Length: 364
Image (tube, rainbow, N blue to C red; front, side, top):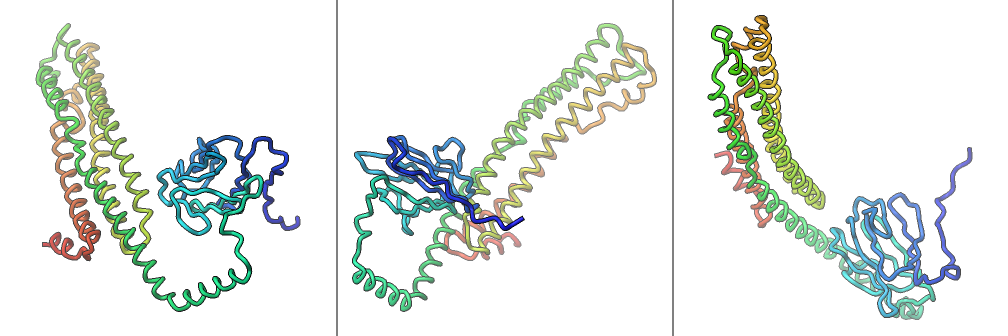
């Protein structure tokens, strides 16, 4: 087979487009170009499939920008995107578009073809004047390249510190969560239920309606355990959403050292989340073990199966609710304190420090 040629651009002849005011030639990260005609007054561009011009570009926001036609002018407007709009190499919030303009959104470039060929007013410079401008720019660039690079690094560092501050603030909001407390009232209910049922024993077995009451009571306790696990799982889902938002914020940091420090904080936050996951798992195990115990009690006292008496006398084969609660509180406090120590270090760095002082306090 022969070599494949470069990807073809899907072009549209403006003369064949009734009601089209402009065409947008979109070139995504994969290098493929596609043309989108503007047939309506407002069009949205972004990563979301709900946009009028959807683009598979992870560096773009879901609804990145909006293009509109107002009083004969075609304008582009930033919709609060993370990486902004770059028009002909300059970042803009809102600007009128002209024929030949090039918009960059993340890793995607969009060429604007305005029907009628209306050029940007400053696009018609004379060759002589243009040559003089280019020569002056080159001289200034050569003379000030070191200063320019330094200013660029400082600007990026400033953005990184601002992002770091936002990360710390969002992470501290997550520190306010109390997953262990979500089951406090249920622990009392379970303890009360167990006390009411007593400790079944084959040496003094309950009979008749009393036996049925015991079996029914343990089955209801198993359902309570399952409901607690479900409730905590819903709580954890909200926490997972917050953690995902933190990850997106951290990815915007360019400085390798800052990125490494944030990665350490993210790992500690994940360890804190694992405490909640273990808490959920323990309640599920309690529910399963209590349900199995209810079946054993039913077999022993209602069906007369003496072979399960040993299991009945041993009780529920799982941690008790107070033990699960105690373990959650202990492990969550430990994980939470570790996260807070790291956030203090990041807070110091975001404020212009080195973070060494906060790290030294942690060792002490």
